[in-house]
Length: 114
Length: 300
Image (tube, rainbow over all chains, first blue to last red; front, side, top):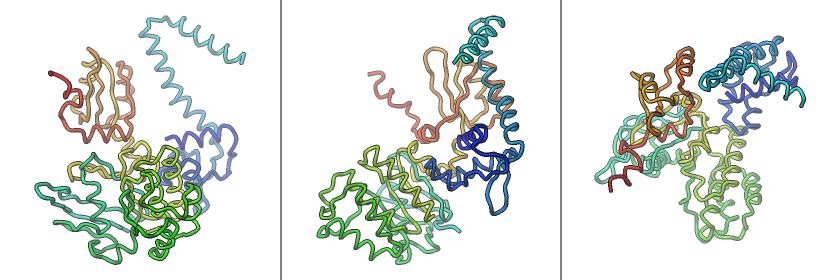
C-alpha cells in the first residue's frame, strides 16, 4: 500500500508528531488523484497496526509510539526481506560469507562519506 | 443504496447475445470501472442502463425503475461518449447554455472554466471539432451536468496524454466535492485504476468479476523461475496465465491463496514472486485460448 508507506515516511521524517492529526482520506485522494476508498484503506491499515488511532468524528491521529513501531516493522519485514534476497543472490554467485560482509561494509563506508 | 440492479440481463442481437444473463448491482456514489475486450458488451450494457436500448430479457432497475422510456432516469443520468449528438445549428457556448436548461444540477461556472482551460472557441461548431476536442467537449458536458448517475463510455477517445491526465484529475476533484455514481468504461485500465473503487469485468456478455479494485490488485500473483519448480508450486492452484520463456523458464500467474510463509519458502526455492497489475490480469482473464498472436505467424 503506497499511501500507508508514504504516511509512514512522513511520520519518520517528523512531519507528523505524536497525537497530531494526519490527512483525511479525502485530502489524500485529492493529493494523489486516487479514489478516497483506496486512501481510506491505507489509513485503516495503519490504524490496524496501531501506528494511527481513530478519534470518532475527528479523523486519524499519530500514536505515541508510532515511530518505533514503524522502525520495528521495517526492520523485521522490509529490511529482512531485502537481506534475504541479497543472501540468496550471493549464494547463487557462490560468494563466501566474508566476501558478502566485506561488500556490505564497503557500501556502508561509501554512504558514510557522502 | 443500490443505484443499478440487474438480474439475468440479456440483450439479443440477430444471431448473437451481446449480453448474456448478466447480474450485478452498483452502489450509490461509487466510481466503477467497466472493462472488457472489444465486443464484450460494454457499450450495450451502458446504453441499456442509460435507457437508450431496450433489454431482451431479464430485469434492470436504475433508481428503482426500468430505464427504457423512463423520464426519471433520463433526468438523473447522462451518457457521455464520442458520438453524443448535439443540435448542429448551435455554437459550442450555446450548447453549454442549452445543457444548463436540461440538467437540474448543471454547474455553468465549472463548464465555463473547463471550456476556457481547454481553449475552446465559443463560436465553434461541435461537428467541426477534431476527435480529441470532441471527446474533451463531451467530457465537460458530462462533468458539469453533475448527474447522480454519470456514465462515461470510452471518454478519452482521441484525447492526448495531457488532456487525459487533466480529465482524470478533474473527474476525481469534482467527484470529491460532489460524490455521485460514476461508471467509466475504458481499455486503459492502467490509466484509470487509481480512480476506481470497484471494477466490473465482462467477457462475452457475461460478468467475469466484480470486486473492489484493491482486492483485484492482490487477487493473483506471478511466479517465475525454473519450469519444474514453477509447475510444482502452481500445482493445484487456479492457473490464469502461463508463458514459457526460453528453454527452462516459466512465468505463471495463479490465484493468490498463498500465505506469507509459503511465499517466503517459494522465494527461497529460487522463484521470483511478483504482483500482477490489474490491467495485465484483466488481459489474461479475458484472452481467448488460441495461443496468442504468435500462433497467427507460426507454421506458415
